[in-house]
Every structure is written in structure tokens, then in C-alpha cells.
Amino acid sequence: MSTSLNLRGKFLSVIKKTVFALGIAFLFTFLGLYAGIGYQVNAIDEIYFFPHNNLGYADVCFYCDISFNPIIYPSYWLKGIGHIAGNFTIMYLPESYYPGEFGGPIWGLSERGRYEYYIMYVATGATYSDLLIIFLMGISIEAISKRSLYLTLFFGIVGFATGGLTGTLIGISLGLAAAVIIIFVLPKDNVLSRVWYSLWE
Image (cartoon, rainbow, N blue to C red; front, side):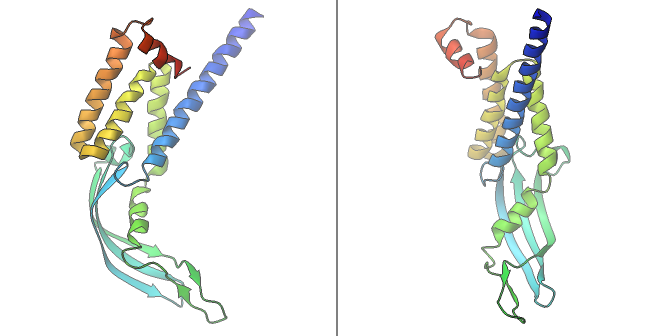
């Protein structure tokens, strides 16, 4: 009976840690959609927008200079494209169509209004890969039961938002220092330690 309870307890612990790591991965992926947190756009410009009204799409070419947060977009950095500057050619679909048998497409947004669409096209090019990598980082932290190491990631994200890549490196260093203090320096019966660990139960 006790063996069965132990196995059940271990199984539930694994499930909780997996769900927690997955939640962190989705949270980071969600934050990555916001400018300044997940990426920084240095320049963007529409080169041409050529609609094919009879075919229902438009050929688009735009220039984009963008830098990605290495914590939220790790796959781009692993591929050596954490900073991208170049031309992109895509197919752009209309928002809707005018009523009637001969109603043509409604393109809707202005050139500047389409920029957000272009940025999302570039930024979400490796969403699933990034989600998987962040999840694996979370699972690694959960496996060693040192959730204080999440501070390294959170501080790195804040650092990117305030100081770009340099800020990320500073943030990671500060987060790692904070994690080391919590794990190895603060006594386990310290009030701050008890409050901290209670947040993760």
C-alpha cells in the first residue's frame, strides 16, 4: 500500500513539474509577441505591395531589421539569426471582399498599418521550435528542483526589454546571482526563504 502511494506521489510530482514547465514555456512564448519584450524592430519598410484583385491576394516585399530576445527566441540564436536584416517576400491575403458577384478584395490596412502583420510573420517563424526549447529548459530546472533558476530567465527577459542584448547578459548575470544566493546562502528557515519557497509549492 505504501509503495503504491509513493509511486502515485512521484507520478503526481512529475505531472505537476511538467505542467509548470509547460506553463512557463507558453508564458514566454506569449510575451514574445510583444515588441520590446520578445523583439526590437530597428527598421521596417514596405518595398512594394502589388495586389492581384482577380486572384484574391497581393505580392508583398518588405525590408525588416529586427533583433530577438535570446531567451524567448532561442532557436533563432542557435541558427545564428538572432538579428535579422533583409528583404522578405510574402503573399498577403485581403481582410474581406466587397459584396456582390463582382465585389473585389478589401485590403484594408495602410502601408504603416500592415507593418505589424509583417513583423508577426518574421517573429513567429519558429514558434514551435522556441516553445519546445523553452519547455526543455523548464524541464531541466524542474528535474533538479531548483526553481530559483527561473530568475535567470526572467531577469534576462527584463534586461532585453530595457537594454537589448547587453541588458539580457546583465539580467542573466543578476538573475543567476540571485538564484545562487537563494539556493546556497539564505538559510532555509529564513523568513524570506520560507516566503519564496511557499510561492512555488
